[in-house]
Image 1 (cartoon, rainbow, N blue to C red):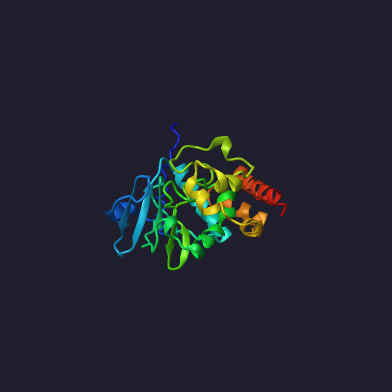
Image 2 (cartoon, rainbow, N blue to C red):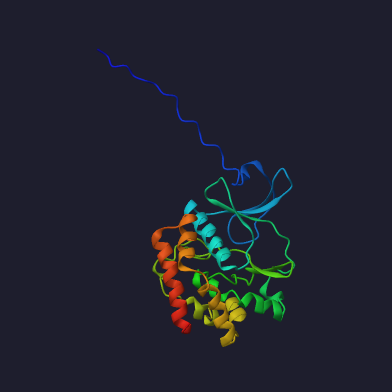
Length: 240
């Protein structure tokens, strides 16, 4: 006797997440502003976004997570948004008042220096930018314009591997490395008390909040523990 085969209707496709930007439905209105393939897109409501096309979904997740850690620390960046295309990442398009570190006045430079601890903690080797173009001014606030060089990947996309470990040598290298001249010019003259204040920004983040942030935004348990260990190493380096 042939058994009866029950044919069930397929599960309906999940509804698109309205929080994800659908760049395929937008109009491209401008070209790239940095080193990655990218463009300025406008949606039907007239909102503009800067959209980067990255090497893989892993690169997009990495940059999104880095942006959330900056946000957790209170460090100002452009407003990041996720897209339906898994290998893209977007930010709200902002017209900057100043686009280069060389244009910042002394007060604005000191404002940028406040976030050295966050750059070091997240291993953002590109904090200043290849051409001094990763710090900009909008509405009186100095912003980090791109965090794609933080955490597990270099700004150009290659993996950092063992160079991204639990020791935060970036605290010194961002201030002293002659191969990173714009970072050296921006952070190299920081006084000892300013250096302590920059590290204290990271020290004030609870370990539990670090773990929760990493896990909530696509990171692994191993990465969460690494970020907690990097925070501890920052404290050790300054005797905090």
